[in-house]
Length: 276
Length: 354
Image (cartoon, rainbow over all chains, first blue to last red; front, top):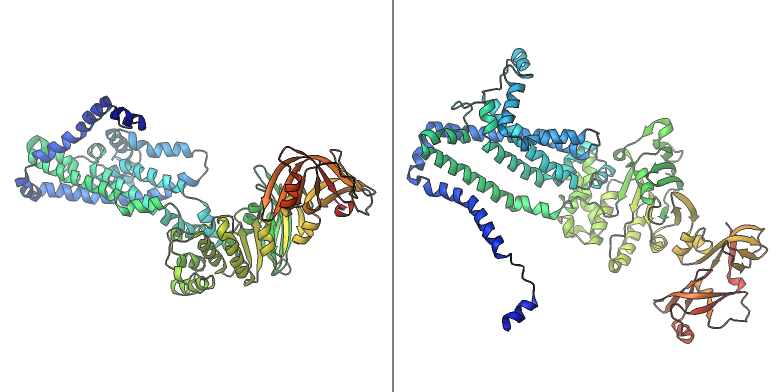
């Protein structure tokens, strides 16, 4: 009787049992592999693995290349996002599609495309080689290029959305106060989208750090020059699974740190506050 | 510095064609219904929009030309000596009140220390010294408005444009902020143009009103002139006056829907308006046979209590508003939908040429 009364007083919002069951099974799909890495990591070998010259080189290369790719993505991505958000050019939708394509393109295909564009015999690459003596394929700059190609769309998409959400009247107000368009952009627009720039940069960096397919296709797998941490993980799996596990753990910790940073006030609070 | 603006622009549904002249030191209120083009006028003057045709110039001999398409002149907003207070203030959310006020000075090349010192003076003038370090989201509506005003005035503009400066405030604080605004506007000697849809703002703040409807100026003058002789239904509603328009012949005005009104006019025949104060409209249950020359059978559309007065809206023809006392309402015993007779003496009907 009492349970009947209670049920009548409110509609239960709990999901039905079959839904909970499927959701739990689905979640296990994510939890199990992460758990397995942590479980199998040879904790006593961590010091030895991280002391290995090849592993250190791979980690150092990953850090340098992913940070470089992020810096390039920010420098190029802000103007691109600005143009996409504000210009009324007729081909804008097409340009956006092309710029965002690497997000959904298989990275290997991206690597092949880069090879045919910037390889030593590529459409653009042959001239870079002939005129300037620049070779990108199978070099460290090639790694940076591959990572930028794959990761920059994340930055563009994030910042463009923020610029779109921004009230352009803020810039009008700046103009009536004597600000040139450039001054208004630097002092009003950029600070207003700073949280999105930060979030976009972190996402881009994380994607660049994990880049594998485009990098190995375009830049190869040369220890010390183009062998980044993900490549090293893949290779180590054949010979030295302990190294693969430790490196995987390092990359996982970085990923968790990125998630934590994105939830942090630094990124969260200004978003909530809005554009003012 | 006189502002002489002859503005013509087409924007979507709006076809704006406005000629405006404002004398030095004058405060003008631009009144009009939504979509009339009031904000567009401000944006044209500020340079946030360009003219299709016409000319905007400032100065004794119209020396400083802001915009003149025929001469291929367009001065961008940042090089016009203007200050603008936007409807929702548009304070910069990432800057505190002090840096908001200093923004214009910094944008014009002043060093940070000097700009902040001047900005502090301005904040003091609007009574917000204690809030210099507050971000806009920590300011009340009235405070944000004062910061916006200080920000616009800090660059010492010759032309101050205010777009509905009180619209974003709740009714409780509006009267107080309006009084403050009047004081601050009085301390500024440039040209002030204020957009509003509230005649109280115009009454308290402005020397002169300009009424804009569908992109055209329909009337300009003091609020007293508008109240005595409203030039359109909108103007009449704005100042709360009954308005009839039609053809005058002798003393009788005939409206297009056939209502005849005896006026005390002495005008040549032709198109004319007639104004009747709501207090001059008497209501009766039976057809009155007194001295009133105008009687109409109407239906009560609405009864609206205001302070110690009652406004009775009547469906006609003619449509009228009668202002009576609560005691008179009680004696009449009318309710919405009831038949009622409205009576107006001819001497209470002011007729004037359209």
